[in-house]
View 1 (spheres, rainbow, N blue to C red):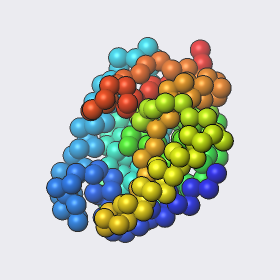
View 2: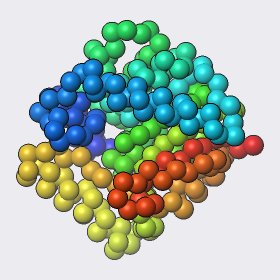
View 3: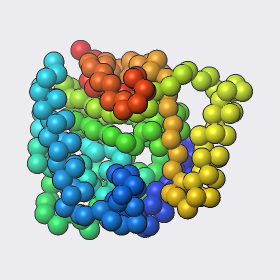
Length: 245
């Protein structure tokens, strides 16, 4: 699957207003984010996530972590406080360049551009922890499900992947509903965003059953699901996934 349109969007965002593109607070548009305040949000988020990991039924080693959709490293740098090595991956080279510039404190972080719908540049069982937030919702459903399967492949035994994505009804490929989904969620949304002078990022959803199938087919198991919806219950979920027992 080509993700060229997604890559172009976030290449533009990385050049134009990278912090706002990563954490969309409308009061901070046009480079108004204070750098320290921006990265502090990442520290708070990861502290909460690490605390959450302690409540799960598996003990996560602290050797290697992956921040998928790292942007400028908001969460990557925060993860480096808890893991020996953290790899941040993003589809946008402009975002990765910005992330490298922001990292002036630690050698425990590495940033990599990945613009395909897989993570083949990493070997099996490469990471103890994988985290992704506010990323999978911006790529088409087929790519999101491919990445989820890759998360399972990359987990070491006992490792955990936590990822958030938007949830919606099941839409079967090749149907009229699938065509209209593409029109609305990709073509029209990009056009409307550009017409308003905004960054033309897409917003996607997948069916919960598809997430479950992707995890199971890859040899993983879902160990917890948290509803992080702000408006409609069940519309935004965070999954915790581990390797099969």
